[in-house]
Length: 319
Image 1 (spheres, rainbow, N blue to C red):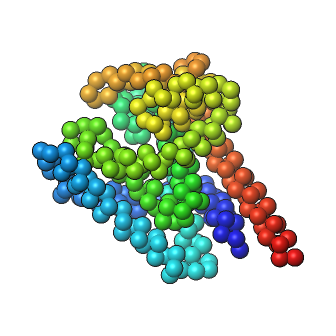
Image 2: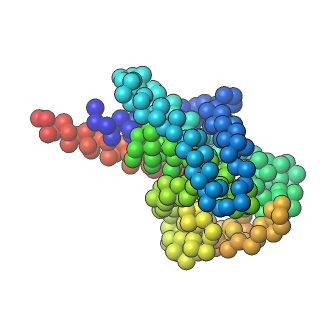
Image 3: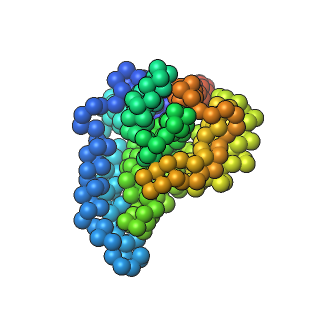
C-alpha cells in the first residue's frame, strides 16, 4: 500500500480513537516528558552571568530532552512492520493530537458562562491560560478560552498532523516535544530568556507552515473574506509570528473581536485587537471548538480524497 495512503488512514484512525477515548487520564507520555524536562531545566539552568552560556545550556537541554524519543521513533520504523507498526503509528498520533481533550477544556468554560456561573468559568479558564483568571470579566473569560482553542488547535492538532504527514513518526515526535518545551521554557523572563530560546526558535520554525495552513483552514470554514483581511492586516502586530495569523484568521472567521489588553500576574499586557465584530461570549468558545473540529474533518477529507486518487492512479499504472 502507498505510504501516503497509509498515512491518511493512520490520521483518520487516530482521530476516531481520540473521539472515542479522549486523552489518557493517567500515564500520558507528555506528562512524563514534562517531568523529565523540568529535571533537566533544574540541573542545567543555573542562570549563568553570560547569555552565551545560558544559550548553550538551553541548546544542550533541548537536545538531551528530545533526542532519545526521536531516535526511538526512527528505530521503530525499522524494527516494526505490518499491523504492529500501523497500530503504533495510530497510537502515537492519537496521543499527540488531543482533539477531544481540547474541546472538553473549552466546553467547561462555555457551559459555565452559559449558565451564568462566572466563578466556575474563571476556574476552568485558569486551567488552560496563564492569565490572571480572577481579574477577567465574563467577556474576557470567553475571549481567553476562544483564543486558547484557536491557538492550541494549531499547535497541538494541525501541526501534529502536518509533521506526521511530512516526516512520519520522528517528525511528529520532534514537533510535539519541542512544542511542549516551548510551553515550559519559552517565556521572556530572566530565568528563561536565553535558556529557552533554542526551544522557542525551533518551535517557531516548525510551526511556521502548519500555522498558516491552519489560518487558511479557519478562513475557509468561516467568514472567509473577513478572516483573510484580519490575517493580512492584524497578524504582524501580534508578538508571536505563528499565533498572529492563526488567531487573527480565527477571530475573523468567527466574526468576533479577540485580543486586546489582558490581565496577567505581572499586570495588564497590552495586546493588539484581533478580528472584527462583537466581543466574545460562550457561543464564541463553542464556535472556536467547532472551527477546529470542522477543520480536522476537512483535512481528513482532503487526505482521504488525495489518497484515493493516488491509489487509483497507482492501480491504473499497474494495469
